[in-house]
Length: 421
Image 1 (cartoon, one colour):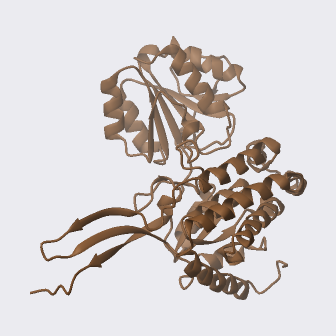
Image 2 (image 1 turned 45 degrees about the vertical axis):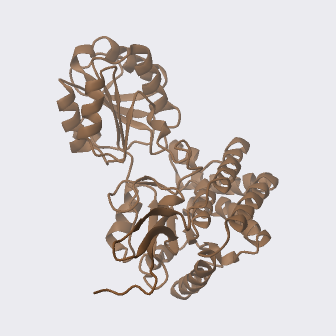
Image 3 (image 1 turned 30 degrees about the vertical axis):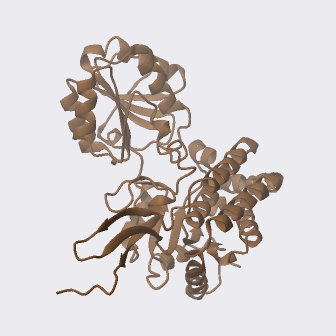
């Protein structure tokens, strides 16, 4: 379909088909869903050359748009990353089916038996940028949780997403599930996003996955409930009681493993008592690894550090850049993080159990870590197989959103001719 199509009519058609598919998926067997996901995984691997070929078109498009190196890294697919997509699909296939799970059960003195059980949300709209692997992750997680999904990938990942989507549809066909269970909006036209956000008759929740601009647009204009995935302004606090080797290893990995993901460290806070020793060692190591350091006054480190300004605090770089400053205490570190983070992921490096307890208690990020790289802020690393995003809000789902988080619940109440007096 071409971009000049009638977008409202196109989107209404997708919505109707998704709603019909959702009614079928809600009662689909675990075996059917598992078969669909395993077949999709096999199809992705069998078609890896085609996917890489389509991805090359997207990379060329990205270069023509002047995407940053970090964004290009998010966009690129190679055989190793396709293997990760396959592994994610198989991991989700192997998980217990959440639909129908009894969360709790009790008997009332009235004679009623009451169960609270998981039930699908219905139709989920997923809007994402750059990373074509989200097509597989989101499609698979929605299917596993009994939801139909309407996917809207970024314009830069248009061809890659279509190739991956075709593999998901092959899985649905093989399992005799409705092909409309996983739909990909077939246009780059941004009007499709605007329409999706207001489709209250067909869509039950919107999940945006992308930068601050995308999430802000969704939150401002959506008439459908939103699972917010805000930017990852990730802080690491290096306490005075930090183990030097652990701190070096974790900070380097958290910043440099992949700079373009939401779990990458963006701000380093160093206790003033170790600023000229361990702190300097960490900053020198970051610089040697190619990281540009925007430092506040009072830090010892490489000669090429850049003076930080107010804009560096609370900034998601998604690049080989990190902000750094010293703090006088853990109390100051916590206060600074509260003022500048996005409640995504924050980390403390220390051997002081009391400091860990205070950090975990007084901060309210979706993910808090101790002596571990923030690059682990990922549903796959949490044992969820994959994630549809990391929700930073406080309603319903929070943190990595896997299949279980894409369900609501209902109450099943059983009596035996029971009446109320």
